[in-house]
Image 1 (spheres, rainbow, N blue to C red):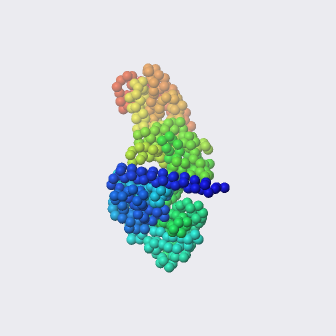
Image 2 (image 1 turned 60 degrees about the vertical axis):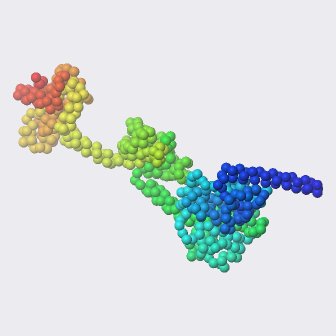
Image 3 (image 1 turned 180 degrees about the vertical axis):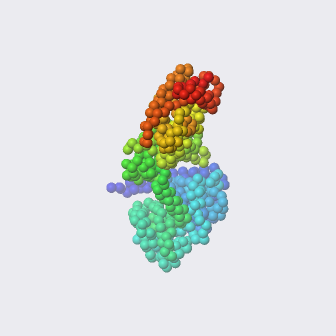
Length: 571
C-alpha cells in the first residue's frame, strides 16, 4: 500500500519525466526545422482537432498552417487522406511517423508530412510540412482510388458507446445520400453489408474495450440501396472531451471496382487456361514448376493423371495455391520423353532462359500405358520490362494425329506404294547425297526380262504381283546398308555403300540376279522370269547420280543383249 510520501515521490518523478520529454521533443522539432527551414507547422489534439501551436514548443516565428477546417486531414487531397490516417496511427504508437501527401491548395506538388507525438510535455501532436524531392511509390494506387466526382471522398461520424450516431459532417450525408434526421440516433451497423457485419462488430468491441484504433474495409448502404466501399478507421474518444467513438470513412469504391474487374479478368483467364486444348507449364529460372494446368497432365501422363487437381500455382506465384493442390516436379512431368526428346527440350529451354529465345520443338514421349505420342512445345521466355528473364512458359499440344499424317505424306512422297521401295526421286536423292559423302559408292540396275508379256497375257494385276515379289526377293538378297529404289515400270536400282573394290559390287549383283531368277507363283498362274543386270561404281571419279545410273543402264542393256541374265560391269 502506498503512503502519502510515496505518492508525492511518484508525482515528482512523473513531473521530471514529463519535463525531460518536453525538452527532448522541443529539440527534435527545432532540429527538423533547421534541416527544413521552408517547413510549415500545425498542431492537433489527440482527437485530431486543429489547435494553436503551444508556446512551450518555442517555435514562434515559424510559418503556421491556417487553421481552417476541423482536422489536419482537411488540408490534403481526398486520395491521400488514408496515408495521413496511417501515419497518424503510427505516430501515436511510435511517437514519430512520416508520409508523402498533396495539399488541396496545390494538388500538383508533393510534400513530406512529419508527425511528432509530443502530447506528454506539450499536449499536442505536432505536424511539419516541407516540399518532397519525389513522389511516393504508391502514387499509382492512390490515383486509382481517386475518381473525379462531385461527391466527397472523406467523411466522419460520431457514435456513442452503443454504436448510435450522435453527429456527422455534411460530407457523410452527401456521400451516403441521407438527411441528418435519417442518421442521428440510428445504429450504423444496420447499414453495413451482411457479409461485413461480423468484422465491423468485432472491430467495434475491440476499440471500445481496449481503446486501440481499428481499421477495416467494408460496404455500406446508400439511401438509394447501392453499396459503397469505404475504408473505415475507428478512434476511441469516449474518455475525452468528445465522449464518442470517431469514425473516419474514405470512399474506395473506384479502387474496389478496379479490383473486381481485375478479379473478373483473372477468373476468365483461369477458366480459359483450364479449358484450353493445350497443356500449360510455367517454370522459374531454377526450373522449378510454378504452374501447370490439368490438361498438361492428360497430355504428358495420360488418362491416369486426369484425377489430379494441379491447376493452382505454387507458393511464390501471384495467387495462393489451394490446400489440396500439388504441383509435380519437372522431372516427373517430362519422364515420358525419350532421351533424345529430353535433350532437345533442355536445349530449347536453356536458350529461352539464357538468351530470351522463343522456339517451338516437336518431341516424342511414351505414356505409362506404352503408347507413343508426339507433342509440340512452344517455349517462350517470361521477361520483365527491363528485359530480365524471370522464367519460361511452354504450351504443350498433342500433335500425334498430325505427326502421323505428316509421316504418311512423307512416306508416300518417298516410297513406291506398290513395292515399298524408294520412288525414283527419292532413290536419286539418296544416291546424290551418298556420292557427295563417299566415293565408295556403286549401283546395280535391274530390268525384268519379258515383263511386258506378263501384263499383256495375264493382266496388270498379275504384273503388280510380279513386281511385289521381285522387290521382296531383292530386299532379301541385299546387304543391310544397301537401298532399293524403283525407277519405274519393271526397272529397279540398288544403291551399294562401302564399295571399296569392284569385286564387292559384282558379288552383290550376282546375289541380286540369282534372287530374281526363278519361278513366280501368282494367283492366276505360275511363270519363270529372270532379269538383265548392269553394275557401275564411282571409283573415285567426280560423277553425278544421273551419270552413274546412265552408266549402269548402258551395262544393263549389254546384259540384255547377252540373254544370259548375268550381271555386266560398266566399262
